[in-house]
Length: 130
Image (tube, rainbow, N blue to C red; front, side, top):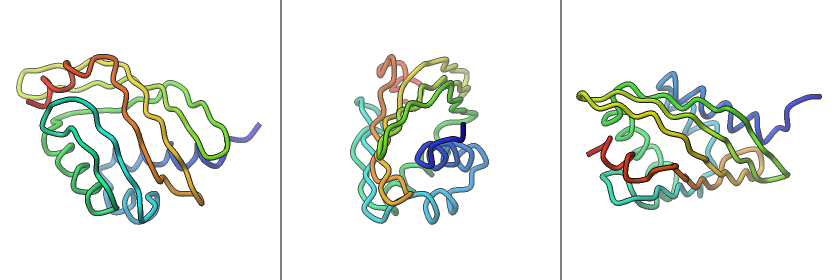
């Protein structure tokens, strides 16, 4: 059985992020009117609208994140929606993040148009990026 095309787009977004390829992420995988919803109270929390704001968020995420990896364990999909079950691991300035979470994506026309982040422990993520 082949992978749902919406899952392929989401998987490719994690691969581009892992390589630090923000140009591919922004130019090939995001819809022009994309919105990312990042929970919490930390430096990265908020809503980011449009390719440039999302790319800016990702650049800051990479800058602050030190060594940080999203490791998708599974994808759940239906037309237009993908949930990625994640293991998030990171090391930064003596801090360690070993967290689970879920990203829920809306995919429109083969591009990511919205993403919601649901960390298991939003406070742990806030502290990691503090």
